[in-house]
View 1 (cartoon, rainbow, N blue to C red):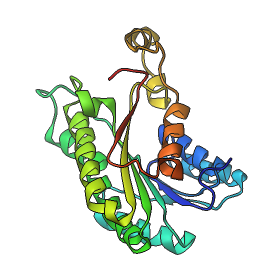
View 2: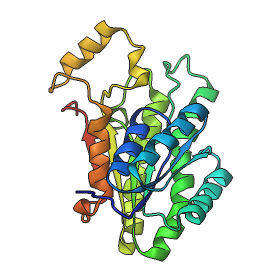
View 3: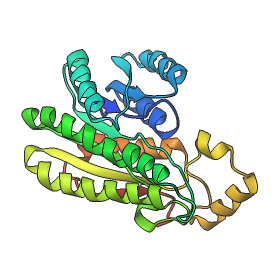
View 4: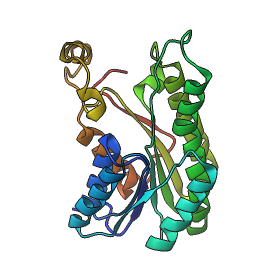
Length: 247
C-alpha cells in the first residue's frame, strides 16, 4: 500500500544520511519528491537518478535553505515544477561541536543559521502555499540532544531545542488551516557521520540504549512516512523520539 500516492514532498538536505533515506521511502510510497543538497553535488545528482526508478516525479535543487531569498526561490521553483507542495521535511543540518570555552562565535552562528533559521525560512515560504490549499504537513528534524542537551554541543542542542519550540508554535498557528507540524527527534542513528567513530565508543553508546543497538536510517524514515501520511491526520505539535528508548 502506497501511503503517499499523489502527494508532493520537499526534503531539505537529502544527499546523504537520514535525509536520503526519507527521500527514498517517500518515493517508494508514491510521493513526487523534490529535494535539496548543497555541497554534495555528485551525491545529489546520483540520488535524483536513483529515485526516478520509483516512477514518480523527482527533482533535486542545489539550494541553501539558511539563506532567506534562496528558500523563497526554492519554494517558488518546486511549485512551478511540480504544481503542488503537500509535505515539507526540514532536515538540513550541521554540527560544529566544541565545549563552550572553546566555541567560537562563528561556530555558534553557523549552526544556528543552518539548523534553525533554515526552518523559519522554508516554513514561511511553504506555509503560504499550504494556507491557500488549506492542507499541508511539516516534519522538522530535531534530535534527542535538543530535548536533553549534550556536553560539547551547546550550539547544536540550542538549535534543535529551538526547532521544537518553533514547531509547537506553528502547530497552533497553522492548525486551523489543516496544516500539521510535527518533530522527529532521532537518537543515535548509523549514518556516514557515525562510520568514522571508534567502534569501541559506539559499542559503549549502544550499551546505554535500552534497545541495545544504534538506530538505522530506515527507523527514522518510516516514522516520517507515517507523519506525512493521512494515517496521522489528527497528530500535530508532537515530538516523536526515534531513539530506542534513550529519552
